[in-house]
Length: 217
Length: 253
Image 1 (cartoon, chains in turn green, purple):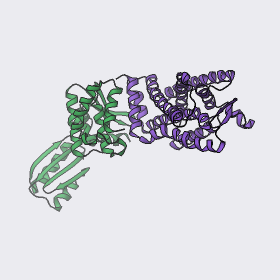
Image 2 (image 1 turned 90 degrees about the horizontal axis):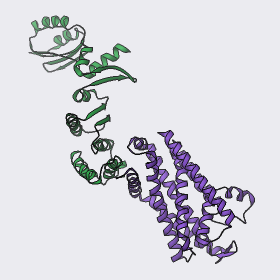
Image 3 (image 1 turned 180 degrees about the vertical axis):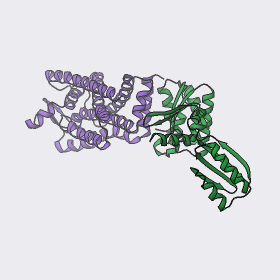
Image 4 (image 1 turned 30 degrees about the horizontal axis):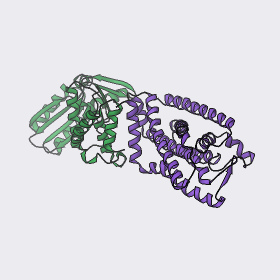
């Protein structure tokens, strides 16, 4: 079937009236850049475009609850951003959106309430802030030094970060342990190489996920 | 749009997107009538005697071609059903706010419409171009038989479409059914002169019951008692296939 047929018939099968369905189709085709594809058969399209049609289909209806599974897989970054904006707008208009995803940055950006599942079992749930509290020993440190050199990098490595990224004078590290003990050691380093900027922030959802998995496996 | 009309429209659009199906639905039976019919007519001579009446071979073949139309339409729709299942859309459909009954009725309605169009084309082409006899007064009965038979084949193939998971298995079953049910029947030849080993399975074949009934409604031939039995058997077969299809659908859900 064609892209247009797919969207219209989906609406008809859910009891949407013909005129309403056609109006929605027109709007969605513009929004999801499907206008030129409406007469193409779905089977001939790429995975990303098929996914775009699947997501567009959902908005043909007025359902109070939307369930999305890996909604943005295969989409280009611009379309991904557009879909995420649309989901945010739908949520703020009162729709409940249940999103299952392995792209944790998406969940972090979009979701008010998150549940982490491992092999069908709930590992943790709550808001992002609540989840961060579950892994208080994991934190990210961003530093800007006046200058960086091999000796500095060796001293930073001696702090045993889980991740260390040096980009020019900027250093980003992920730690798992006691924050206070680390700050003392960083103060020692700053005596030899001045720190111009210092930032400590909570872990990302991905880091929380990894920490939780390490604890349970 | 109601659930039934939405399913009907979906099947219509699905069929129109794939013109190959329309060819199989409507033109292959017509090609059989013209090519196969004329070829055998020339070979057998201008007329053949069936039940004490003389007919041209094409005249004899028209009811068989109608049987072929009902069978092809039902098989192609069941193929669409299988593809829906294969792609996961079938299971998605079951979550939509339409009942299983609406789904089946919507599909059957479209099937039946196609079969009625295909049958009408065959009857008209046969009568106008090939001079085949038609009992116009029994046309409603002919179309009623076409409708019931299309539904029964669709129910039967739907069971296979729902139960079988592999495409090659589905294709094998439908191809085998196509060959066995069409050739072990009265579709192409009268059964009376054939050996017993052929006649027994042929008389047990629902295609024979359907074609014999169509031969009665189009040509006015056939022993009344046997026809009555065949009509009852066809009704029972349709009911059985309906029950099996509904059960398969409910289990799939």
